[in-house]
Image (cartoon, rainbow, N blue to C red; front, side, top):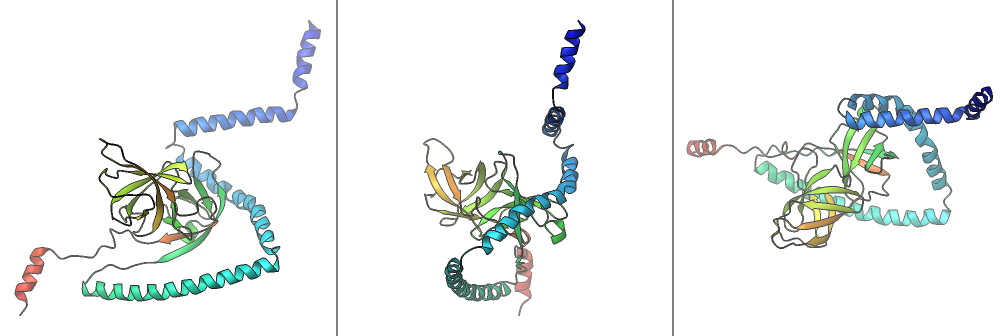
Length: 303
């Protein structure tokens, strides 16, 4: 009998100490996952404080990758740098021409608004940021940016890359912020078809190359290749920024809405440098129009 007890004790003694720690870590992780999914609202503050505490660690863990990227860029050959320089010079020339056209358009726009006695004004303040990590949850499409409240980044601000809308800020701490991509299944954005002006809602599907167009009437004139831009409705995205390109249209007889899908214009998988856009909502930028009775009184009072 004592021999059986000795063998049992010996069997547990053979388990390495690291095994106990692993089991304990798995149990703790499972418990945290359960309570976080069950009591999401109660754990919101806990998640926020945890991210604040782990903020220095996230920054430290991002340094090796940034160091490797920096070293690889320094090790490029002189020939590749020369070729890239030529491409950049050509791109700079094109951009300069476009800026000249834009300056003229904005000057004309200002004159027209002055004639309409409009209070509409544009605030084009932007901030460059860098993606330093990705949410490991496969069901989420969330990136971490290296800028936060200290630079003025708040929840709801739109984020773009060089080609179009990427998403918007969903959480911000002192030095970091979280960017939810338009491809996240929890994200929707009001858009309009650039060719026709028809409005709809573009919803993520958890896929960086495929978005779903909701609430597009069956009678709407929409076809593959149409560009979708922000409609300006809501408080987050100003109007006119490229979002996606229609990639598939399926019309079903008897259905009230057209089934359509689009591909994001922004490079959601490869963009590393992004722009956070600070701008007032379209609602705040609308011109002030006097009531009809005020206009009538003004007309009668004029000589």
